[in-house]
Image (tube, rainbow over all chains, first blue to last red; front, side, top):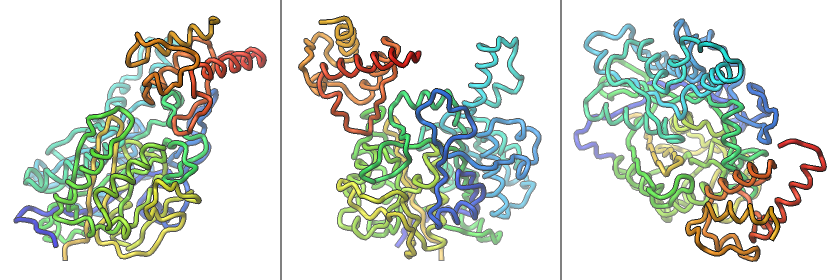
Length: 412
Length: 89
């Protein structure tokens, strides 16, 4: 079915997450299967004078539990989330450390973030402008910049190949994973840590989001008639990607194969998505994978529960899948973990890989009354056992930035 | 036309595709060719000018904003509510 044309194959040998449903893939996946919801009344920041008071916050995160390095313990939370998720992925992959000299320059670390250390910035500005402090803490700049997560993780594991942060709003993690995939495929590197982290839940950011008028004060109900906006969340999603023969030779666990990647831009509007951009990204990912639409079993939708995304995504899926859309299982796990912004695509990629390994499609919560304009099978309320060989994960970001990944079973 | 209506029409004009177009109280908002983000900017300008908060969700159908006149009426009633409750913006 897959014609790899002699091209190098890329597999997933490890995963790690930090999410509003908990830290660690086992906890996260159990919560997805149980239909738990990580969206609650916000507690990590003041909700004084806000009319949006709910968010998907990471519960009980203790950086000291998984992070050993002093510099990561002093970093912004987004870097800590990345470090923690990377640690889980690396441990699962059984990567032998320290890396040999022959390996270190042939490995990559691409960890993006939508806004980086925004919470550090908010705190620092408060100190400077409100409290008239004479100086900011010396680590402020390093904590704030978006590249620090990738830098910290590269230092942690001795990765000396391509290492930087990537930015594309809600498509950040998907683009980061896709880029690393292409680097391995094209022979630039042999393995890499890829994904993104976001920790932007704070008072100022919520005020800024409120002004855009796209948040819901009630909850995140994708594809539902009652949907009225999205809910902000945070976390990190990281994959260890590796060239297949190398992974096989060293006996690494192989969770899935990354078979296709598509990226497009709408070139249309800063907020309203277009069907063309979304459908092209999915089509390009399928073509890249050498698959037809009917090969896909499960689509982890972008599904932000805004009025515009959900109907646009439905139409785009119908355009790409045609009649095959009727046999597709689709769901938006954002209904459970919230909109993790830059990190979302990474967390959702992990859900897609798990769906293949476990032959289970997580539900879309809150789908009591389907919007007649979103009339595909969005797996309402209860997850389902289903054979999943190929899973697609969609990310459609502000500005019309689209990225789609397709995962398949471990090579036979 | 009163002061509130004048100010609102000024704000609308600033954010329209074609600012030279005539704006009357009876005009439906759709005639002004305002897109969703522009609407958020307009709401922000109005809030800032009058020191009020306008509850508005871009995901919901808002009949209250059908015409320019209905926007003026809504703003006036929020101004009155805000004054009555003594709440600062």
